[in-house]
Image: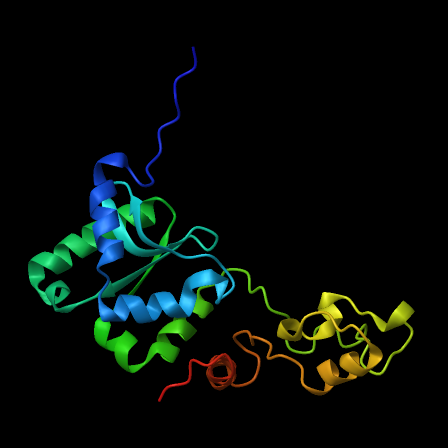
Length: 200
């Protein structure tokens, strides 16, 4: 009889703690969750996720990323020591850890999201200029005028007619720049602004 494989995720003895934390989020946790839930940043995030004996604020398995939002209690020496031990454990599992203060989230959510997007190991959005030679903008050679999602311009979806296709080409969705492509931070800020996460 083969032994059951053990898991380090969401251990049953911590279930009540995870549920309580999800039911009573801090205001910064609420704001961050609203910004990343439903794959809004290109990958699924889980909140109050158990990893070993720890419960992390946010976890993205696809990016092997943990995001921690730290309140005032994390600024004392004992808490900082516990945080460094926790981070070492998570790094030992091959996970990357990003830490932000609650103040960062409350005052600069766009900047926090920019850092999270920068940690994506494989950007899912098209690169600047990618697909230009195969784009159907102005090309009416498709049967019935239907384009593929790659040619339709991202968030606009698949164009259903040549007229819609023309509109998608006139107003393409923003593409996520990569480091080294022009003013990366300025372009990233513009991308976040278009998605509605501009700093007030």
